[in-house]
Length: 234
Image 1 (cartoon, rainbow, N blue to C red):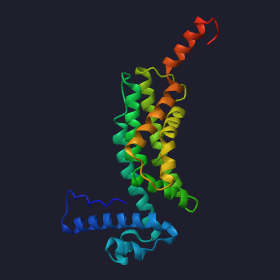
Image 2 (image 1 turned 135 degrees about the vertical axis):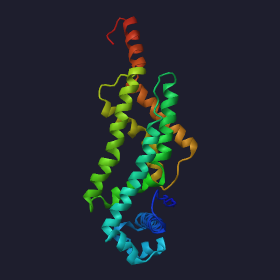
Image 3 (image 1 turned 120 degrees about the vertical axis):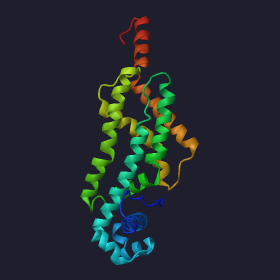
Image 4 (image 1 turned 45 degrees about the horizontal axis):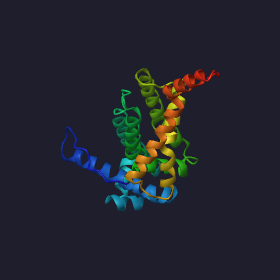
């Protein structure tokens, strides 16, 4: 996992600053160890060594391993959501170059939110630890996929007023869009590889073309006109 610098406190003295730095160090170290060993295999001693703090310091901050584990999950979700909503802010608003704009958006979403270390780490935790910790699944649904589905649905609703799109079920369209852009990436990630820029571009382009074939109003109108010219029902 990528190491971070502790956020500078807006008030307070050296003690508060040191506590903040220790928390960041512990969370980053715990994420590394949980990712590598899983919850059961991770030990507080190993996390303490990775964070360069004492075992007691970790217990002072988080009381027990379960509390630390959920704090790591929440910390990573907060980071992924911050990245996610910065990307969602770039969703296309006009229809001038819809295929190109949606492709560029899909590339950004895959590169910064789905294929980055935090995104893959959360996915791995859900798969390996979800059965043991149902609360993890609940948090992931409420703060992960559920949030992006809802936000993307609203963005497609806005876009459909400006673009030649015909979408009856916005929630379904949002889920299908995400499934399409993630399809190739999941296979690449399965083998522990990072996608190349060419793979990101090609995967996104193919996904968007498929999505627009399903929801593009222009295609539907063209089919109707062709059928009418042949004297057949559309």
